[in-house]
Length: 184
Picture 1: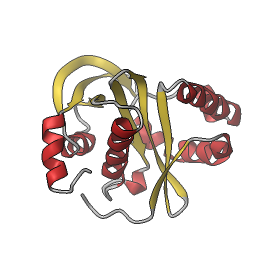
Picture 2 (picture 1 turned 135 degrees about the vertical axis):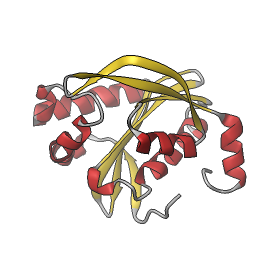
Picture 3 (picture 1 turned 90 degrees about the vertical axis):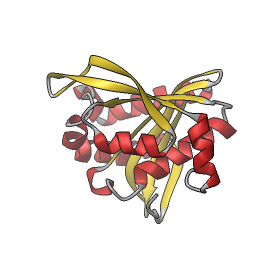
Picture 4 (picture 1 turned 30 degrees about the horizontal axis):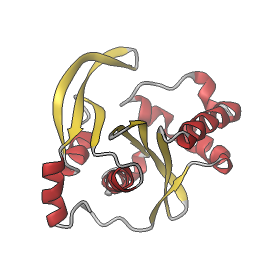
């Protein structure tokens, strides 16, 4: 993993609303090249505030762990555990275009894996990634995930159907990474 300086993770808060809206608007075109578009109503202060309320309500129920990623104090991404139930959860992240390729996503995944295991007792993790998103596939593979199932026409990006993969966390591989101090 590349050395990532000055990256911090914190639980999403109501105080993040204005800066999160600015981040989401600035990165909207980038994100929408890779993942399904958020509804138009999200891109207002009220929309982001509702999103934060929804995320924090799920967090209070221990069903979601929504994080803000900052580098040198500026939001550069989001990461979360969602649909947390028993020992299973889904992993997701979105990284600013300018922060890509610098190890931020790998650092976020490492952080999520640690939180999943230590805070929630989750040992089975899954992520959905577009078949043409090689960068996210590499991040997941380095983090101990493997592609398990192809989902034809799973999402729509820019109006076109997109095939995706379900990646599953492989504890055996992650332990190998732990021995090399790469992940834990």
